[in-house]
Image 1 (cartoon, one colour):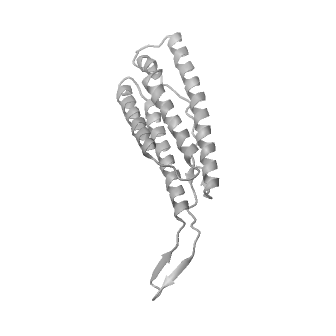
Image 2 (cartoon, rainbow, N blue to C red):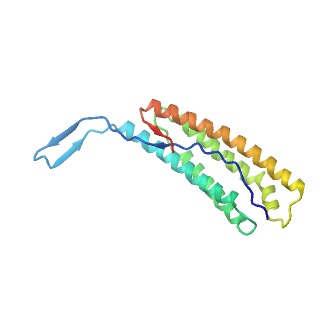
Image 3 (cartoon, rainbow, N blue to C red):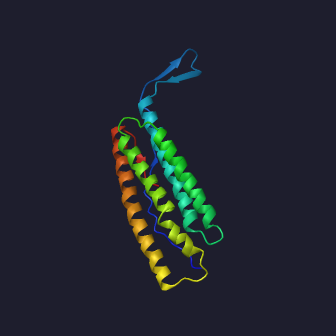
Length: 178
C-alpha cells in the first residue's frame, strides 16, 4: 500500500510572554512576597494557551490519521472524531475573554471543518486506504481530496492565526513563533 501524504498546514503559536505588570510589595519580615497581578492578562494568556493546546492536540490526531494504513485507519479515524467532539464541546462551553470572541469562533469553525471532513468526504479515502492495489483513478481521488482539504484547512488556520494575533494585541500579550 502506498503511504498517503496530506499537506496539513500548521499555524501554531504559543504564548511566549507571561510578563505581569503590577507592583511588588514585600510584607513584614521580607520572607513573604505578594504580587498584584493583572488578572485580565493572566486570563487572556490562559485562554490563548488552552486554544493552542487544543489545536496541537487535534493536529497530532490528524497526523496519526493521515499516516494510517489499512490496519489502523478505523481506530485512528475514531480517535480523531472523538478528539474533535471533545474540542467542540469544550469550545461551546468556553467563554472568551474580552477581544477573544472571534478567536473562539474561528477555532469552532476549524473544528467543525474537521468534523465535516472526517464524517463525510474522508470516508471515501478510508475505503481506498483499505484496498490492496490502487488504480490511477484512486490516486486521482486521493490527490484531489488532499489538495482540497489542505487548501480549506490552510484558509481556516489563517483565520485562526489572524484572530489570535488580534486577540493578543487587544490583551497586550506577546505571541512567540514555534
